[in-house]
Image 1: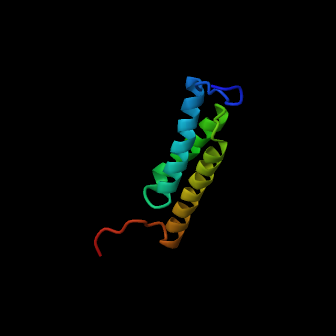
Image 2: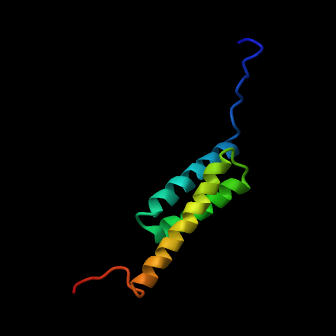
Length: 92
């Protein structure tokens, strides 16, 4: 290596965990917009918050995960209100 090439130090395990949580928060929030928003929205919120609290290097992903988690819950609330409290209808 020459003097101009920066050497990469491995991230500590806690930082890697936080980065994984940030990415998981983003992915779960994104999927939650379409499926299982009652479960995936809160999970995205929790994982995004934990990632930020642990000092993730992927702060943008964690913030997007938080925003998508909130959006999941807003979509759920709008669905419940528009269908008068009944999301799934079984039978006629």
